[in-house]
Image (cartoon, rainbow, N blue to C red; front, side, top):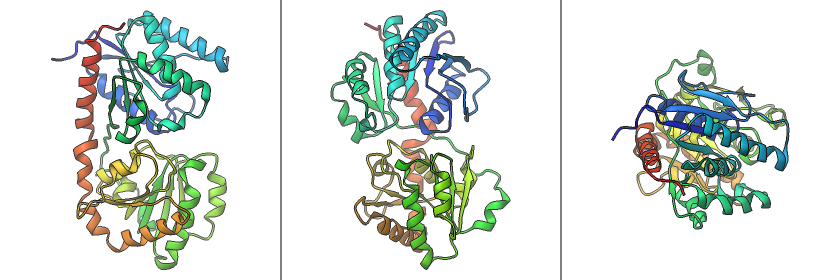
Length: 361
């Protein structure tokens, strides 16, 4: 059964700034634009990072109000927009936006899919946690990224695991600058405390004593960048800033490293594996353990236990990877079986058809 052209899908997300959920929202919008009319609703276009297909229609629902009043206004603006645009199904991203979109969808009497892109405990406001318990059962479907996180959604009947679709060109033009830094370890993400870049740099400092030929390349930006640059002085460490496509950087890296203290399902780990580059990551809640295979001979990366000695353990994992990289590289293709865009998009398409065929209550 093919979706009909006249069906209109609303994709709702607060912004399209650099981030994992924003990347997925943009990707899904672009891919579905050939099958559906896609209207993408954002609160603002500041720091827009990801490109959109010309067929994707953008609507900005701005409000000068904040707090409860601002969010109430957003609900009513969404409701009116869903009605005026004749939306058949809404798809929202990230917990707070999910809650607002579910309210608006119920008012417009259309089915809705709410997608989670961080771990359950990341929602630290008691007010929003209560709203999540009240609204999520009203959605047509809730998706989460990992089996571990799914266990928290026992209060929702229609909750499923739907990993991020990842598409990356692993044979791109390589920037000449990379050759001068090889061999190098790559890491990427927003430079905030929960991403653990400070611990990553310290692990690299320890590792560098034994492997001085290595460089550390860090892609991304954030409030901690200046402090991290100060911390990295004296090390072979290069801050790349925001990079639209990391493909050439993955392809030339010895391995990718992640020191996050929490990750729903890390796009960067998956992208690295799809480019044939093994990974090292903290075994944080919840995503890395569902991406990195460590059983027997089918290991494609290393999981590092998060304990009091985790920085030293991370440095030791760097040493292990540097010494035995070939053993890990041969299993990186396992990621295609679960995370390739073709496989995940087929799941998205089926989920959308199922929800469109349901009559909302």
